[in-house]
Image (cartoon, rainbow, N blue to C red):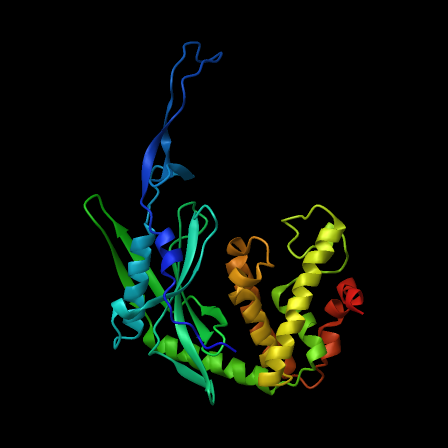
Length: 338
């Protein structure tokens, strides 16, 4: 497994640092029954968010919309990290991963510092990350979330967003912010994360069950080969063959990753967790999940919910993995690989 690459994601990050502005919306001259003379209308209740580099309209917002530039969001995120870890300097933070759609209407920027780390197991180092989320299309409010990334393979996940709150104050003369970062809660998060990972590692899981568990954790539905069973039903593929192909590609990738992680970590739920986070963390290479940028937070939320529910369920005496995965094991997708 390749060790964590600390090369800054400068190219992708620079792509997001374009200037934006709010401009008035004025219609082209037109005439109608109510407006017999050709004239333009000034839409006073709304403004357009414009990418100043290419003049593209990113969204239409209300006139009191508070526009926060990605550069400002990034700077706040660095200050938050320094609040949580006072021994570091903001200039030493690395933009480890950048996720954004083609039109760059929103972004997730993960920041990391190579000297801040902790061990989950012996020789298994993890780093805390902070994810800065911002948007120009109202999809997300400015958001800061805490997560963790594994050194050996750069698999990561967002674990909690309640450790940090940032209050934005806007005035006509200036824009500033107030940061509240709970250091004690961060330590609690680290301890909780370690506890979950220990629970996953001690639960024996035959490797044949790992891909069904991937489906369970990410709420993937393969109950049929029709569009109702599509991996992501809101993005319909043109035919059943395409649906099956997408599912088979994900299954084959998962099975390859199973071999890699089971060899290193053994047949346990911790290996399954690493397969899942590998799939989610390296979509820039795999390119299997459609519209991944749009689905990033939803998939991560599903994974977090699964960790908490699975560790609780697996503690029960009557827990049986075959019963837990009964729905997923019945998917036709598994017959295709027989």
